[in-house]
Image 1 (tube, rainbow, N blue to C red):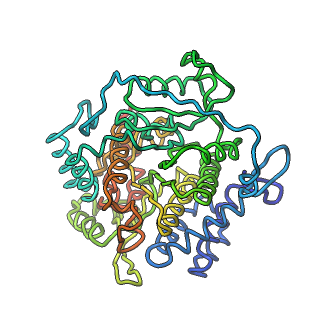
Image 2 (cartoon, helix red, strand yellow):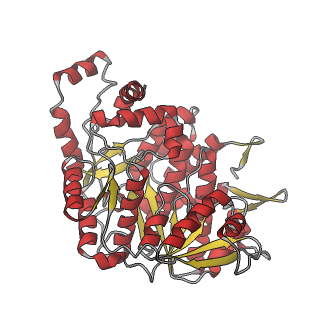
Image 3 (cartoon, helix red, strand yellow):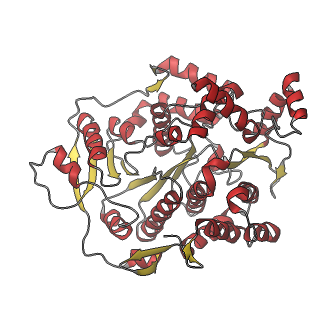
Length: 490
């Protein structure tokens, strides 16, 4: 739960307090500006941008540690009317452990041996996939390191043989999650999601047809003759209300395993769920040495990016047509603003810009939930833990389509050089990056791979859909994209 503030569980004041705490020891002015902000719902974007600017360079570990400490100190666990700290809640022994049930796929679908990606009604493999990777790179849709990673994976097809690898997928039913791909590559997937018989029937059906193995949390004691419908009615856990039980269950599962957070929830639920999972992760890393992590970073956030990306975008902006220049003048520079107007320099001399694609309509809770994940990734990698965190592209998931404005913006985004992906394409590509990160010892996911700066962890292998390299700041064309998308959809 969010903490009580003046008798209410305020999401806005908590978010403001966390960001202020994260910057307190790094920049007094930025800290005080966040602490004293009176309109957090509208102004949070500028504070997250400043937080990102400060996080480039030597301060990244300090900001991540202070931000996470604030989160864990602020949020509470509520049970039977009593409030506990997250650490206390997870340290109390639990009598009613979640039961474990495992099924082996029947291999109706043979193990996939070559990378195959669904895209625009086709399945891309081999040379066709390589040409598409080349096109995405040339168009500024993906970073060169993304294309390089997938080409390397294609050159080493044995990396897709995952029978000896276990992945805990938090949010097993997520559209963006890797469950389907991992099972098709023969992996052992430990699936965690809410009690929802329809969801679990889909998951069980995927597993049955695959060459992989599925483990799921079960309530009750099914028999060996239970049907999948009966299993589905007993499967699932609520990470929010059963956080200690889920943590205890994961603590006793055989390892090693990679734990991936793919959970999405609307509004404040997203923050609460992200914090619950982070509390579990913190506990697991303290009690085990064989747990690795995986996340998907959102493209609609703020990132420090190297000068090469800034220069690419600026070249594109200089080539703007006269009509665009005129529109900028008529709107006082609000529309078609350049994506980058300034650059910063780290203490080590690296020049970087801020790719600011934060979307106000998504709200401060979404930004905070995703920042918690980024902080944990930064922090644990510095302590030698494997962590795969890759920027995924904007995707037409059900949660986006339900938001009328975002759906319209996505429909009109192509007019500004942005690529919006379908869920099947995004989930396959991001699962492939995860497989690459696990198998390739040179990937930045491995803590012993040197980085020029901590921000490289998020820049490498990014598939941002063009947002970083576009000539215009995303928010400066958002209204036009919405209008064009509305017209197109109607």
